[in-house]
Image (cartoon, rainbow, N blue to C red; front, side):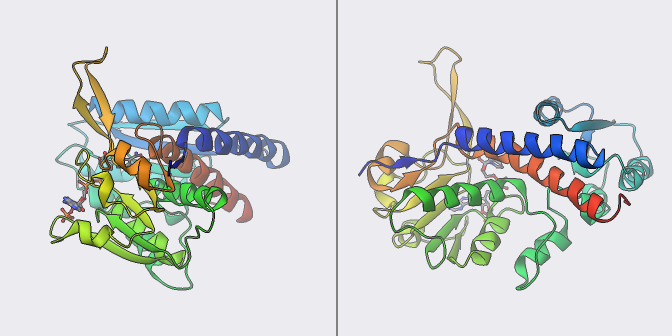
Length: 302
Ligand SMILES: NC(=O)c1ccc[n+]([C@@H]2O[C@H](COP(=O)([O-])OP(=O)(O)OC[C@H]3O[C@@H](n4cnc5c(N)ncnc54)[C@H](OP(=O)(O)O)[C@@H]3O)[C@@H](O)[C@H]2O)c1
């Protein structure tokens, strides 16, 4: 068996075009341009780079962006006051806090202060709680697991007999950002879910009957191909930079799953890179569009 490749880049490009069309329609019909604001540590080059990348993608679909630097000298009160301003600003539909903020800031207090209708990262405890409650839906689900769900839906279209509902799913990792919300989304989609983590005694045994594997650990190739059940759908969230002296750049990105072996057994698999990565930022854009739609439904009030 050679696996169908869940091409995150291609899926993300398709969704991005749909979002751009919706943004253009919204501007014409309502005179509203979706706006995303970010609070970001001024002195953290990686955070600055991520926020720039998110702002660029927003600009490409016609959204406005605003970034506010948090410096080593910004007091907690100043950051919370800025957040309150963004919460009240009708031009800002989505707010993200790029983690980590500087050490002296109580980040959880900042995150807890985001108005739910603007929490486009979907990480507010209320949003995660709603994911866990039957009959309730959050305004927004976190971007990375949402992107994985879109990829699994794509697998339903391309893999004969594959359906999320009723499948055995194994999520490797239980982080607030990926593993836990991933498991909750899969349960909402009627999968039977097992979560494996650092204390799991036998990860191989846990995977033996997995129709769906979502791996979010960050340990290069910790899952050998032979651990994958034949016919499974595998989504590898991990992206780890490893030395590769044989390449021009001297490094490459790898996932948790050993790809060559897994491709022989899986029915569908996502590549690293070019899998979940491109989906994550597009899901953030989709949430921001949704936030603007909610604001319009509420008559433009914040
Ligand atoms: N592509 C994207 O857009 C995207 C987005 C976010 C993250 N990522 C990548 O996804 C990976 C995970 O990110 P994260 O933020 O969730 O990381 P994290 O916070 O470090 O969480 C890692 C999780 O893996 C678990 N774990 C450790 N060893 C394990 C093992 N042997 N078997 C099963 N689980 C094990 C940990 O368990 P404990 O809870 O017991 O410690 C923890 O829950 C990283 O490589 C990250 O770069 C990619």
